[in-house]
Image 1 (cartoon, rainbow, N blue to C red):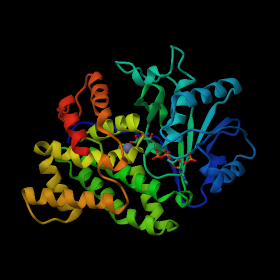
Image 2 (cartoon, helix red, strand yellow):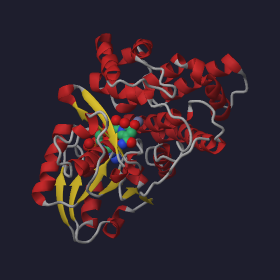
Image 3 (cartoon, rainbow, N blue to C red):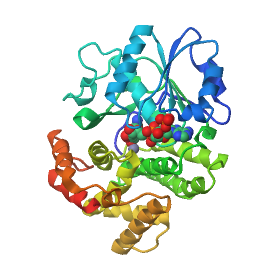
Image 4 (cartoon, rainbow, N blue to C red):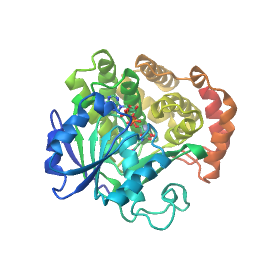
Length: 385
Ligand code: NZQ
Ligand code: ZN
């Protein structure tokens, strides 16, 4: 096992009717900005619950944060924060609203230039200060509720970039599974896939004799496989929603990555596919992950066979186990309604070169062995088609 330091300060408040606890979690004197998306929280009652819990606070609102949150929009929120002297940010929504809130928290304290520097400068600029953030999560997917990462899009430039800091961990996250009942099927499926791929990118590398992390990863994968399809058939099943929500949090709160190699190539390529073609985050992942594993089969075969045995109970060995494990994985993606090839999205291949060039321009190779460069990215994209 590799050395590691693990620190996760996020207070999780989980369960039914927990939104009312907001008043015990936000300092009484705080001047709060509540940030949200396109209005789902107004339709499902979450907005009213939050407002009732904050009735004794000074609360401003900022709405309209898009899926794949947009820099231009967030800069408007940052202006509002400065103008009103806001000192606490409350994200109410899915991963996009929360990631956007993290960007605003850092942007308002960044005085050395355009806050976009925090995402695109090389070497990376550290966040030195940020406003405190709280989160009421309404979509189980990203793990943003218990990590310090954020992914922001800048459509005008065709960019989607990530940044992170220990200063961007939410102070608390309220996870009420009932808030996820109103998710459209496609977003529920997206969430299952996002969490699934998060686990795979921290697990499907090579063995470093870390059986606890392996079994923790396998546990999350198995629960996602068991519960995901149930949520589609029965969206108001509390236990199913609760299990999915907790799985998604565990998939990216730093726990399963302790001391093990990681491979974020599927996410890196997926982010570029979203920037180029506008696919949802998880739609890009469902297409790329199986192809990327196949492309890197020489490195990943051993761990994939182990995964096939542990997660899918395949008793065969070698290539047969690999092939059957891959078939089961792709069938699972299809079972919950994901497309697994790019041509199904009616896009053409003209953007592939842009994607490969943008990743290449960052000067780093992807994968746990840093062996995925421009040539391999183009191979992967073509095989995704
Ligand atoms: O905007 P509203 O009206 O709220 O609608 C949203 C949005 O259209 C809707 N929604 C959310 N909760 C709902 C609901 N609709 C009905 N009922 C509810 N309870 O769902 C749509 C998608 O929401 P979004 O927040 O975009 O989804 P998700 O949570 O999957 O977040 C995706 C973003 O997170 C980034 C992705 O790249 C993408 O930008 N990621 C963030 C990560 C992190 N911070 O650690 C890691 C991930 O790998 C990922 O990259
Ligand atoms: Zn993801």
